[in-house]
Image (cartoon, helix red, strand yellow):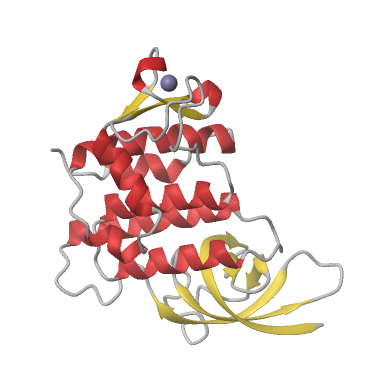
Length: 255
Ligand SMILES: [Zn+2]
């Protein structure tokens, strides 16, 4: 048996018998773990409200030889996705929570079991922090998708059109799903178009922190273009659509 204590993000929780929960969590130092939280439904002392997706906290767990499931003894929350909730309307809080669920689901899909990935952890933690601070959820979501794909090395390049070699796609780009590439407008015949504003967001996102992305006043239209392009790219890589992405769309206020 080995005891561990680590900074972690809660990704997902599901029922396990009457009172227990299985908790999927991403540790800063040892990657993704699955743990049994004994009596989690009743034990507010050990878990409290700490099992909401994207909650960051100190996880104490025990690993046993030849067991995939660890024993999760406690999570002390340090940050929850809606933060203190100051001044937030119920709608805003609901949108923050559904986005927290979406980010956590993406992290769960992307993080392999037990393989340390500190950059992925830091991305999730920083985006959770910006969400808790009440930043604009749509800009934050596009930022998160961009960086997630980028960290995996699968975000299509924007520095050159792969078909004609034209440099820097500043005035717009078109996503060709089949090629998993952005091409210039002249080379595209159909595909998901990104306006110059959408490409500008991506160029800024390379150097922005999540908090900066959440503060930048980005118009809805380019964010919508990026949402469509990113969901196509994510579906290509995961070979499925995410349930939480649909929930996020359903909760969006009508323009
Ligand atoms: Zn071209």
